[in-house]
Length: 415
Picture (tube, rainbow, N blue to C red):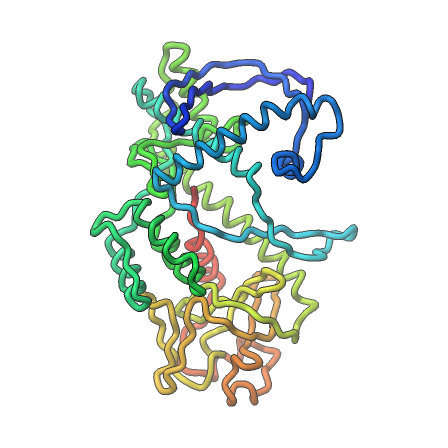
């Protein structure tokens, strides 16, 4: 809200031309916003795609340009530090006046988004350093490197492509970054990036500072202002306690960290459930249609296929892959036919037909179609009762809703 006084906790930073934070100060303040700006609006000015239309916006341009210069400095420091930067596609649902989904479209970030993110990262680093210096316990945002088992699995997978991850038994984020840069020109870059991403652990909240592997920080926490999460509130309270010369002790920090990590996962699962339901609602009118897609995940009970045009993901059950017994290989991320040798691997292209969109379970099911289908499978008419068909195929356990939710939860890291 422009021209409205708002209370804030400020992190005032002195950053040099190499992107190093030389000094910082925390203090409570009252601020007055000069204008309400949007990311796209600011980016249109910074990229010279548009000009500001009023005096208030024109007056802001020198400050925005200075901030953009700072962003480029921080970005160079990020690359030098070796922070991992995975490229992922986020989507947005567009609804009509009746509340139904008209379309699902990709969301593209611009430098205005990245500029704010770099400022937030810098403030978060200062907050964790401030509390560590003053020996005030708090919740750090920690992210550990890959487990030995996941690291071994990743390296075994990369060998198939003639690639290797440097760093020995303790690779750093920079080692991941070097490999990511190397694979960028390759046609299978998305496949390789996905496997690299899944080799990492999820970030969590803990009073024990073990650093943030993905961002390549020795200490990091969630200070975000305005406050967005309960851990942010705890960090703000801790900072205020230091400024007041007291100590903030809400209870057992270990228990609080575990609770906040659990509620974060639960919130993510709730968001996924809602998204899955909405996508089922969107797809139920398209039963029988064929789509092109990419295998986004391989699991013991089948392959999940992400559709190109509508950004919806669904399952091709193992019983629908063909008249063969398919073995699941979790290291190579593939299903391998025992007799035919047919492979379905992460990143493979498939043509599928939608056979089910169940609102009660959030399930979207496909069968192979077009060139993807083997002659036998293509000739067989799919039954409307997909779950009943699974009992007629080779003995593979049926996929459950719980299995799906676990798969979804494991596929997304948390910064």
